[in-house]
Image 1 (cartoon, one colour):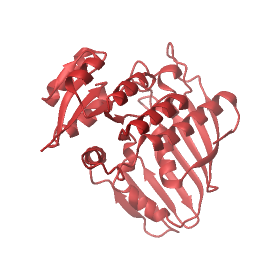
Image 2: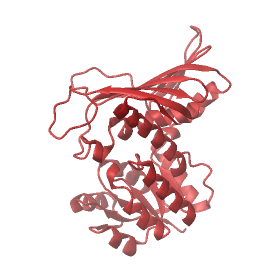
Image 3: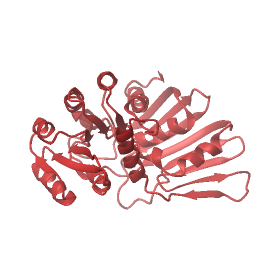
Length: 326
């Protein structure tokens, strides 16, 4: 059996989610691990029990000769890595957010398409096994209002507290909710976003602590999406996810856990997550690389650009105080 050779650039916490699944696939060989903190690369290589840890990115590409590169790097580090991989014909799995500007994303997308690179991005929630049922419930229904949220505490990575290196909580973290909005309800037409600061006191921190985006969809539906990273450890859990209010029912997406259908006081129909969606995403991408059939990839780079554009428009509205047309 010919194995897909996979390498990793960026071996922090998120990378293990992918490594843990790929290392058990009989048709995948993990050949390289590289990180700016060499100890992390060595630690992931030891845990995987395969491949080699590298201190240089180009050295890894030239020596390990991967078929596919997994990028699990901070948001501001995109660009050079993708260009070098694409030039060598290496396929790409890229964690979100894929860039901090549309100009860079458009460049990478054009380069990948010209070279025939297969891409997948880390919008993992699309692969949840109950999302097709939510789409089925939505089919043919008129949607008026949508409310959604991702509100919690401040993540720990050192690059997180600044817009220049993470793009803000709305873009770096809550992008999953904005992506699910698009996946379930289609494309946005305009956005207005307001936010505030003053709760988090941290040296060097310049993010909005919280924001609310009002998004008018092309269908006419209006969505209100909350983002927040100011909640302390003692705060009660926030109802993160999305509620879609149709003419005759409400469809509730509980973040990565379940979806329910509630119609006019009748018994609520309930679908809970079963299959491991991260494994589904990993398997889907590897199968696409083996067969050349990319139709099952739910989150290719070109589509991920549309979610990036929506989140960047929210940031623009936060900065200008104006409605941004999409």
